[in-house]
Length: 285
Image: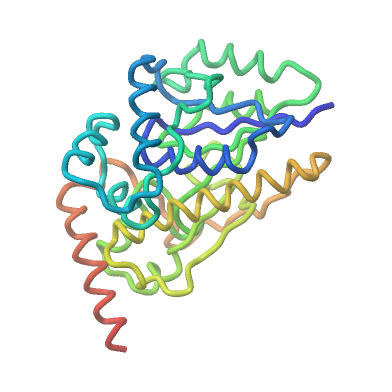
């Protein structure tokens, strides 16, 4: 019985760092079933243009104005965090759809057609593992069909920083203690709640105020989350006869989950200023 696994993620520029790490780590692995994107099929022209951009600018941490415009056209909605990732890590080698066998499931990950595809993937004697980094929750049938073999990467420490834009939301509140405890990343099993499944692995930065901005901080958290997820996957590929048990988190106290709708433009600005204020006070202490 062969161990099979997918990486499932978004059609975003920052996810290209994850896909690059995945290719570098698992290329040629017999159990690597490929990358699944929550996106409609991309045109061949766009895929070629993205691949050429990554090839030309791989490793560069500084881009010309024209290169930035090209990148924004290739990945619409480029965020401040993604800009910070370029400055910190350089342009990654691969695009999100680099592999020719990339599976495009469409924007609606919980659509009936996706359920049919998943049922087919899980119909064999050994259900595949899904390692995911997504912006949307999965329907309960994902858990049922895979036998709970879904592990998510979260760019903050759980359970104290659950939900969308959690680290930014905590920075906006200037909660130094909670922020310091949250600056890290977690891999956890997916359940029907929000970042509430059993925790498999995690890591935390010793100095949460070593970064230039909240976006530089988030850039490093994304990369740490990708490292944690890839490490968990690697351990499973090396010992496919076992599965991590995970530790069920205690969700009492201040462990509420943040919502996408709560992260308004005003809240975004508060996060920028809040991080700098906490950093300045930390520097003086």
